[in-house]
Length: 112
Length: 115
Image: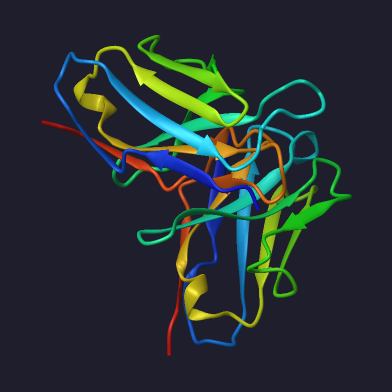
């Protein structure tokens, strides 16, 4: 199985400041159709996960443009340009290239 | 309005069975793959199973293979997860998720396996 490793585990951030979360995969996520199926989710306490980013860098409808995804191969990053109060929660990466689908362990973002 | 509503969770003894349902509305089941994904505070998110948009193919996590079975009723717009020989480690919140790209999630149903 592809192992997804996120860092850091916990990320205290200052409102208005940038934040960055790393996600590494144990194998390249580049699929034979030339797409890389790496997705990012945000989960607030008591809520279901909400998809933010798909195929590395594509923002979902309604997701603020302060969220950006980048990376390739086995190294990926989720960036928040200026953290807002509603950004707290846990962020997960997941790979959809291989069966079984596998998730990272999550990064908890909290306000300092 | 698109919705996924899970039900069927509860408390069950180890070795027993439970069948989860996911009622979909606002879209056609035959247009999308449907997954079950589970979550615990300790293990985080774990993908469980998927059924293809045409119902012809399914995949399972190794941890549930041979015990769980995913199926669907396109006329009733329901996806099922039959869970047999349940173990304490199957205790989790079970989500129904739409699309190969995991774009849309239900609110989940809680399964507790305990004697």
